[in-house]
Image (cartoon, rainbow, N blue to C red; front, side, top):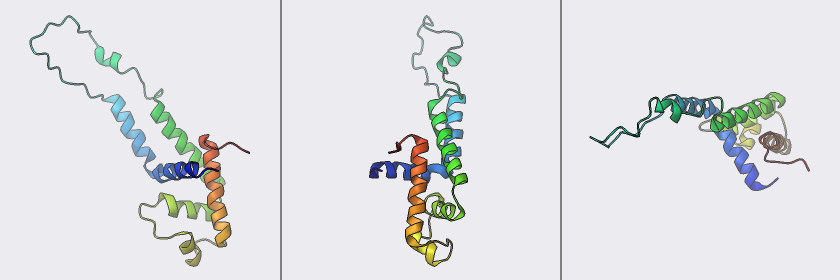
Length: 142
C-alpha cells in the first residue's frame, strides 16, 4: 500500500471522534444559510424574486455530498472497529482517537494494555488501516 494512502487513512482516523460535530455543523450551514447584505440602497426591485431563499437552498441535507461522505467514513470505521479484536481496538483508540495519546505501540506492550508481541501489534494496526482503506475505496485488492 502506498505511503500516501496510509497517511490519508490515518488522517481520517484522527478526525473520527469529531465526525459527528462536522456533520452537525454542515447541517446547520444548510438549515440557516448566511445571506449577504444588500448594498443596493434605493435601487429598484426589478430583479427581486419572491421566496429566493428557498430557491437558493437547493441542496438538502439528504443530498449533501459532504454530509454523506462524513457518514460513510463513520460507518466504515465503525464496521472495521466491530470486526477488529480487543487489542486492535486498544491500539487504534490510543494512537488515533485520543486527543493527547500517552502511549506508543511499545508503551502499550510494556504497560500490558495489549497482550501481543511488537511485531503482531504492528501487523494488527496495519491490517486495520488496510481494511479501512478498502472501505474508503482507496485501496484495491491485489
